[in-house]
Structure formats: C-alpha cells, structure tokens
Image (cartoon, rainbow, N blue to C red; front, side, top):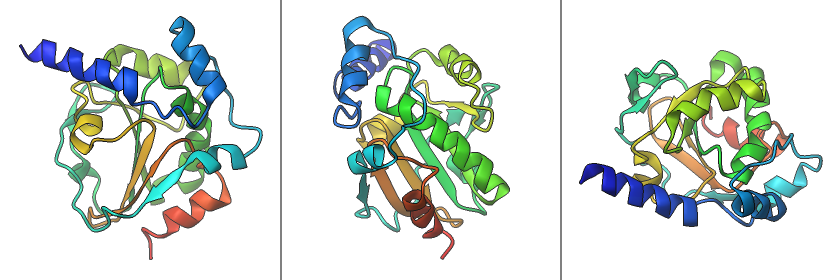
Length: 196
C-alpha cells in the first residue's frame, strides 16, 4: 500500500507542483516530450525574480523533522545543519523552473561558502537521477540531497521550486515559491535576513 501512496503523491507533484508561471516555454517543452532542456542561468535576472514570490507567513516556525538522504544515501535531518543559516531548495530534475535556477544556486553556494548550508533536496521519484544531473551540468558546489518519500513537498504543501531559509536556531525566516536568480542582489538581501 505504501508504494501506491508514494506513486499517487508523486503523480500529483508531477501534474500540479511545478510552478508553470516561472518558465512557460521550457515548461511546455518539458511537459510535451518528457525531457527537460539543458537551460543555462537566465540571461535576464529580472525574469526569474519576477516569477518568485516571497512568503513570510511561516516566519518563526521550527524547521521540519523529516528524514532525507545525503548524496551517499545516509539519513539526515535539517537539525543536523543547525548552527548557521540553512537554505533548503526543493526541486526536481523534471521541473524546468527548478533546472533554470540551479546554476544560480551553485553560484550562491560558491559565494557563501561555509557561512550558509545550502541544501538542494530533490523531490524526484527516481533518486538515482539526482547526482548524475548535477554532475552533467557541472554544478560542483551543490550536493545531491534526496527526499525519495517526497516528505518536504507533500508535508509542507508547496509547489516546485520552493526555497526556504531557516536561521541558525532552526526557525523559518521566509520561503520563496517560483524560480529566482539566487546569485543576484535581491537574493543576497533576502539571505542576509537570517544573519540579522
């Protein structure tokens, strides 16, 4: 019964979760033939930021206790990363807006270094695709965290991509739904809120 529930949850994510407003041409291509184009960082940084919506209605809530996997398949929780701000990006290899923002997340990880835990947690039903996806696109600063039971997207009731910032104490600061230029100035201002 559990595999059936996971399949149904995954199908609901596939059908309704990806934020179609963020990159309509790429999304249409991805839905049409089952592939996602190799999309580079956006040429116009205003485009992904315009699609992003900042939600502060969960500010102060504790980070969830879901168990997920690191790149080696070892179970971890968000509490394992407390002590400095944690940026959690929920994404999938089949989600065009997610793919589009990945190079900017990689640049953010390189810029912030040890000052920020940046966790890209895949919501793919086929976790084996995650690390090859990151490697093929040369996203060397991102680690392939996986959530094979889709706890984050279903438990938090969010669409993809969604990025959530937690402060060093594990309290939510904000969440952003939709694609964003994470290497840009607007993202830097948002992330600075966790350090204030």
